[in-house]
Image 1: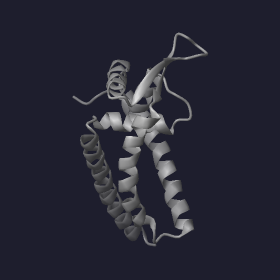
Image 2: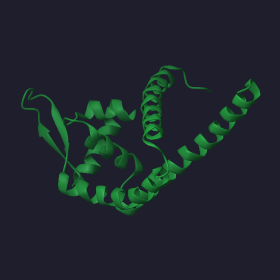
Image 3: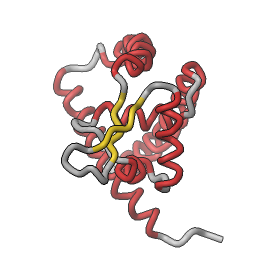
Image 4: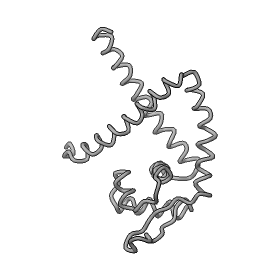
Length: 159
């Protein structure tokens, strides 16, 4: 592939990536609206359910980029809505752990599952090797995103 061809593909990929990210944000907003939650709450709940152990408010703040005060308010909202509970850490009574409530999370999961079946059809015509490549790309993009988020947070804000 020639350099101009590769440059054109990178440009096309950048454009489609921007559309993809915008579509995901808008989709997340629609799911949140449907459930009566804030979009950040939906994503925090998603993070809570993929972690193997309950998280502290500090860990939620670190994962989401929120201040601890904002993360506390987020957990307050999730707790009021019945999606999460706070429990003392058995190993360190000074810490409080935030745990998703499975019965309430099932409500969110049901929405995602119903919509997800349609999304899966996008992948039906890909080979297993292509699916592995897509998964590898998503994993690497996630790792790069975390690094770039940390970098951005360390930079001074523009005027």
